[in-house]
Amino acid sequence: MNAFEYANAPTVEEAVKLLTPADPKTDPDHLPRALAGGQDLLTTLKAYITPAPRVVNLKTIQGLDKITAGPDGSLKIGALATLTAIEEHDAIRKNFPGLALAAAAIATPQIRNLGTIGGNLCQRPRCWYFRLETVKCLKKGGTECYASTGQNKYNAIIAGGPSYIVHPSDLAPMLIALNATLTIAGPGATRTLPVQDFFALPKVSVRRENVLKPGEIVTEIQVPASAMAKNSTYLKFKERESLDFAMSAVAAAVEFNPDKTVKAARLVLAGVAPIPWRVPEAEKALIGKKLDKDTLAAVAQIALADADPLEHNAYKVPLTQTLIRRALTTLNA
Image 1 (cartoon, rainbow, N blue to C red):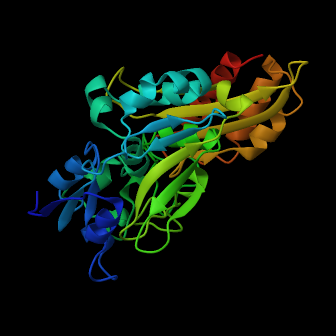
Image 2 (tube, helix red, strand yellow):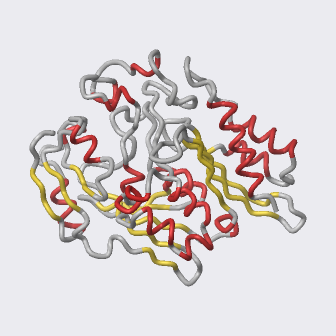
Image 3 (cartoon, one colour):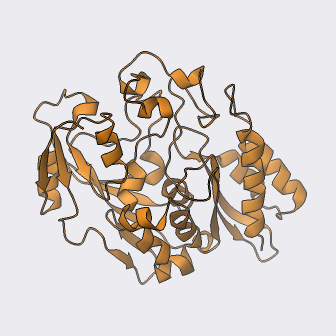
């Protein structure tokens, strides 16, 4: 681990100042880093993946861990709210069950006690080439994505290239399915954008996974109340029972008409693309239909129509199709 300066931020404004590099042309891997739960940052620091000159502790900012349920049923979740707090929050379990399930699917109780929603959204890829200290892959300023022709069992089957990472967040796909937004504070004006627009494909920014600019931090996530939110779920497949990332996962939210046909639907895939992958064509195929066997099979096929597997990960296509069918079945009216 490289030596770095450590600073406590008493306010969001001070955190932004401490995180803003003096030179705007600073290499993306040498920027000051925000410390929330530290479950991802500490591992990348130890592996020399993010040799940060300064680490800014956000946990000293009061109120950034609050979860507030509005009178209309909506949610405001501070970026420092822990995964355990989200998993166990009564209003979330009642009105946003998919979000509680997504939080519960992450790692172990010990990690969920420390990990935060902001950190979960902003974590770095888990591709083993990226995580190897001695390998300078494309995402670390090299010239090649070694996963494209190497060991790619866990890598992207949709929208891959020039890097074939998959985004590791479990909360992100569920938040997108719930039509959530997030607030970003930075050197400029505070901005709010849909969680869906927060992530960046490698073809847009191969060195970064999101749209955060130097000095910016996520401060809050907003989740609107809806009939779909109350009828949501998250289904994850992983190799190990605990402490593992999704080989594939599905976030689903559905609203039904009185005749049990689908009125509205959101379907987002995880573990298969460099960003949480929403499948609007599959959502459209659900509208006006009952969730019978034929509909589920057709929707699963549509959702994976753009899959282009690498040598070792074609299994993700039938796996994800099965997860889609099972997730939607649990939401049947």
